[in-house]
Image 1 (cartoon, one colour):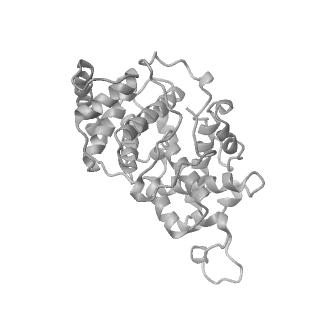
Image 2 (spheres, rainbow, N blue to C red):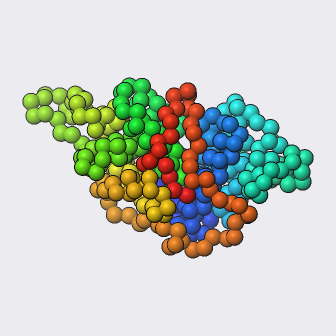
Image 3 (cartoon, rainbow, N blue to C red):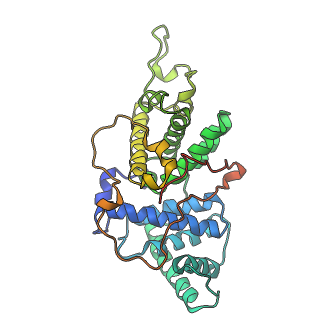
Length: 329
């Protein structure tokens, strides 16, 4: 059993004493900082996404009030530069971290950079303990690349799915579902957004198709569906259990988008209009910022860019989608 797959209820059992909604909000902010830091260091997307998974795993074993999200993000990025063989000097990571925190250029020999280096190394010790020295991570992006290669579909669908996969790291999906489930959810949602509001529902796209009555073979051996809307479901050969997981992942991702300030981000209107699939009742994970208890005063200029970084995964990066794929802050 994968020790890194947690039930949703585990979000209430983290070491942090902060309310769950506040923890999830700070996780999203930390991932945005991590993305921007990785992009400024010109890291490959594989390294950035590995660091993002570690970031979420860290806070399942250490309290958010004990380790600031920016320190953890910087340590995850620094460790990823070593394990993903895209090494960057500690001083460079610290300098860019401080430049983003303070909102200005920082001399590499400054006191701030020296202090940041020490903090990154100190946090890295806790990170290694949290990860149990288990560095191997597989992202939904790698599953999407395989799916793209197997089915030459609309480039807009690919771009949109890729962007949704990036945004999934702003949620805790990587803690609850294996990468193929997240990849399928992102692809199915992308198809629905690109197909438009008059297309078939998410429920229909991820339903379990019944075998033909004339077939003597069991359902697990039924021929692939010719329906383009079921490409991802058929490609991964999902059964009933996996389809339920895809529905849950879609529900969480759409809930995250609806919690953003849609009025400030027109492109999200294409996403939030999508009706979520049918899932068992559960507590809402993501709520509007106005409903979250005020977080501690952040460091100066601790803002987000409102845009996921351009990807460089395996030389097969679709361009950023211009409308539905972007994400709110």
